[in-house]
Length: 491
Ligand code: ADP
Ligand code: MG
Image (cartoon, rainbow, N blue to C red; front, side, top):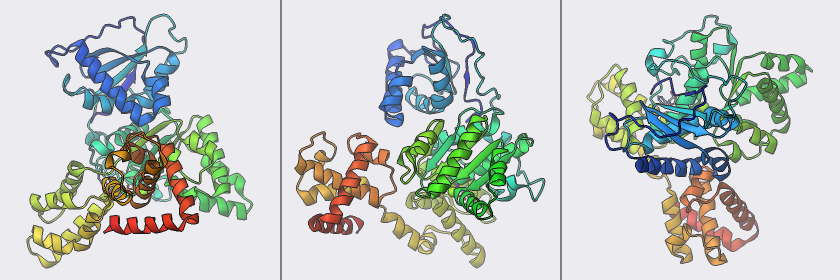
């Protein structure tokens, strides 16, 4: 991964002929590039939704592909700015994967204006000018608080640095944008919204941003706090009629990070205050960084205007760690451990503990503690024994696939109807029940579930969940069905 992910071309160009790096792609033809770009489009459309895709991504054209840079052309300054600030990282990650058979890698996305005509009068912002550096070399070396009373570093875990963060496909985008937010001296996207399930590294990345800024740019005032703490302080300020200094305290920072913002769901006056603080900072050009367990659209109990405002900047999701990433994390932590852990044991753990990184770390710590205590070599057998509870919990993880099969069998409909477009009641109802169960028995988000039901929109899933919830309250038979299905699926 390089720090130099993309830059905004400040010269418009009339050159729209795709030109490619001959060394990197001996037989890359235009049609292959078009095919790759087509796949990138499909994935972007799924990721960011139809409306955003239509407005911003669909009108883009590939202009050239050279030296690891994919140059795209936009029709307007607005489109160029928007794509650069909001979609370039995602485009880069997806393009790197989809252009795999044409070039070995894509390191930058450059967006330029389609023609010299219409060149903007205001000089475009350069979004990232850093030279390529490896994450490890650029990360602060265990930055320690300069001033122990300093609020910015008081609650920060010194282990949570970029250098200690293992990057893989599932967290690549979040890592890239977090680094950019940490490295830029101006606001690249506002807010930066990081979301993902519990234990996947959101807090780690936020602390890493704070450490990085502390080390590289100590004059920037960073404030990190959990949404819970934000609320606590707000309530206290209300009680002591001291809301003025409460506001002051937040509104004087350059970078405000609020962790686990879902905490203020349903807490109306805190939300209101947060919304005002948020707007004041954004209007003032300060960077706001938010984390949550769900995407802005999926945050229930949040006021609509706040939800939509939260999604305006850069939204980056962290997916559950896949096998490679789990193994990578275990290896990196095992390297620093005082006892030796055989590769086979690490592989075994990476295979079997799939829930989240926090649990993976916990498991590793347990193994290490035991090894140091009893001084015996670590084997797969001893590991399995020590981690018996965790391994059982992991194998109980429910998949959407299992839910769909069970529900289809229960109602006597074909499994394929779970993905089909047919809407007749006898098919739609079981499908809604399956969506409801998927929401309740897995940690997947609405969009994730929608994708697993034939690419349906997240609003369809939300509607299904609501419908079944209502039915379950009023219809004893449905309620019974649900209880039965849950027990069948969970066992
Ligand atoms: P979240 O805030 O998303 O619930 P955390 O940031 O608290 O998760 O991460 C849980 C634990 O897992 C932390 O100890 C963190 O250091 C570790 N962790 C998560 N992702 C990674 C990663 N990619 N590389 C190294 N450690 C990680
Ligand atoms: Mg956290």
